[in-house]
Length: 316
Image (cartoon, one colour):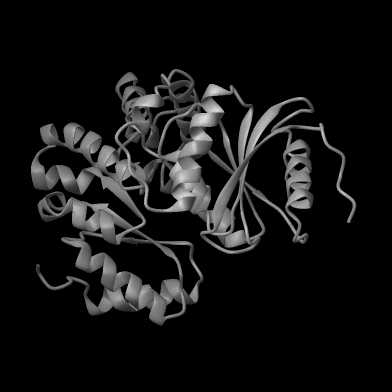
């Protein structure tokens, strides 16, 4: 395995990012997982727990994609530089492969570069651009990214609005096929098993929403890797977690201020948070996930089916 390719400037930029308390750090032109591991180590040494994103732009990154996925939190399909490396005709198939492998590895994916480039100077996108964005959504990407369209274009707001319309339309037409994802799977972690059981229950019980009471956001990430058609609400008291999970597909973060240490009280507070956000109504069936002992990161070990409004607030 080659030595990490980070330059002194890269290292200085990482320290600056840590000082700014950023939530994500994207690494350009990584060749192997070693680049991502070095980035994470430098961030930790600088006191940062920012999530790291590998921008897939090199042939070497394609060859070492599995290694990179193991070492990173998310990847970006940086199609401009990738096309220079592999040829433009190879990019669509690589995009699908990268997204599929990332989701299988429980990593989030950003698809970027020239998604609505004509809107730098035009108020409407081309049909080809609309199809490009829609296909990325149908492939399973977590996020789509604009560049010059909003950085220097004449119609930045219109570009964002157009992209939103396309994403919403594509998501609404996405066929839900969940059961096949649960076959031939072996889980070694309790919290990951709970996440999968929650999805299975949500789909077959036709619930209105999934609510994950989460400290780190991991349970919400795992559930978002499968297209269940059920919205996932990540209820967390941590602003950092709220910012992070906002990039996960189908996950909607809700900041909470849970103070109780009793499970029933916490579940009641979760219902109230969902009601206040307009996510559910009384009588809706929802699935809640929670960890005990309460407040322990990575400790999700319980799921509960709840009919909203059925139970009174517990005595505290």
